Amino acid sequence: MRADRRVALLAVAGAAALLALPAARADVWLVAPSIGTEVLASDNIDQAAGAAARADTRLTVSPQLQVYGRGARYRLDANLAGDGFFHAQRTQAQRFLPRSRVDGSVVALDRWLYLDGSLAADTVAESVLDATLQGSSSNRTRVYRERISPYLDHQFDPSTSLLARADRTWIQTRGSTAAGTTPVAGSLTGSYHSTVQSDLVRLDRRPTPLGLRLEGSRVLSSIQDRGIADVEFSVARASLLWGPDPQWFVGLTAGRDRARYSGLQTGGTLRGALLHWAPTERTTLDALLERRFFGNSYQLKFAHRSPFVVVASTLSREASTVAAQLASQSGASSLESLLDSAYRTRITDPVERLTRVRSDLANQGLSAGLSGASVVNAGSAQVVQGADLTVLLLGQRHTATARIYRQSTRALVGPDDTTTPSSADTRQTGLSLEVARRLDAQTTGQVEFTLSRNETLGLDEGVARVNGGLRVGLAYRFSPATVGAVGLRYQVSTSSVESVADVREVSVYAGANHRF
Image (cartoon, rainbow, N blue to C red; front, side):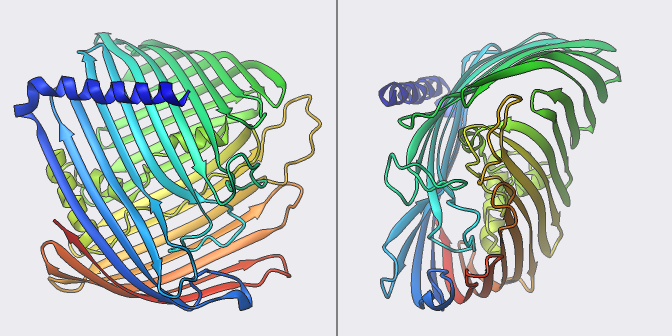
């Protein structure tokens, strides 16, 4: 399987290169290397509980290479980065944690056939019930993803379109235990391979004022070398649409869904309603509410962007798997994507906009990622219910981001399944706030606050972990390409289990980032 995967990915790369050759002179390219360094002195470098705390000084080296290319028949967007950790007192082994992503697409047949692909390497929390504080190089599982997605997308006329897409994603996790080891309930500590096959066919007839949508989808999740049965979700639905105005339409849905998991096969009739509202190109609202085999299912997405305010919100309840969640991670809630949305009106050129976003992140000392809910291993199949609200405020002298999230993950139990509640069912709730304000032409002040509560819902209901942190810092621009930063951070993690001691850390840091 891995050999076939490599052949497929090489085929994507080769196709991109061949299709790029005819338009090479018309291409737009941006290559932006940079390197960041940070020296951090901590009184609890391991973020350990109680008397196990050890002081140490850590050097972090963070190389990064951003590549953006766009031609008539292809697009490439790559961000290759990672963090190398070196400890003066050797309290921890040297470790490199990747955070890279490469996305590409090619036009195989104009207005008909396309090909997408991506490579990604990053980390997620091993266990949400352990201390999950910022800046930690422990309690992290490395995740590698490779995806190839051929698809057909054709507009027959202004009202009729067809989409047929096949996504194949290969995922490898490397946790703190050896390969082939069964993960601890609720955690991602094991090292294993999994695949996700996702297929979608959709025929749309735009409402004028009546319309129709026919859709069929299938998601198959597999974990290799574990003896765990595959999980499959299939849906076939038809939607009758009504839209008296081009800015919005509503619809009624009906169909069948089928599920296969944990040796069970179930399914039934689904029914529901949908809404699409787009008063302007900057504001969209999509909602789908259905009654399915696992109960109520809903997906709501709201997005609004302006030069000064960006809002992104989701509300969902759906059946999924660990592999499917890892496969769908895209970093869409990153600060980089929010800034890109804010600048889209003023800066239409994507290369110029990417350069501006990259400059703002570096000059203000902002982190590109936003804290949120982690993937939880609650069983072969699970129901994930979540809500998320992210807001960006952009002014002449300040940049402020706020995020609130809540996510519960429960093992999926079939109608005839007498399995007891999973000990890995969890609920995650949190918020984060970061404000950067320019004090003068070279200096920016920063304040960041995070708070989260992770708790169990199953057999061990009532076990909870609360994590909190406060960071205060200054960023100083020495030159257009070099920024220095200093700061102080305090973090604490407490457990509801009396026998588990609190984790506390006070640290100071100094660092620099240089863009070549």
